[in-house]
Length: 65
Image (cartoon, rainbow, N blue to C red; front, top):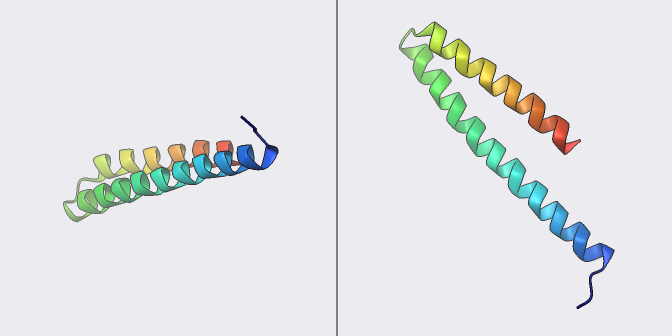
């Protein structure tokens, strides 16, 4: 069993890419919810989702850096 730095690096990059894709998918869902609430004039619900989107992205981007 041989573990090299290159193998570990590829594994870590794959995990990070999966996390980024998951974050983008979740963001897409949140943005769809925001647009739905906007079209229905539900501003308080819209604001909650905008705040959630902002905070989650800020925290996730910090972990990727």
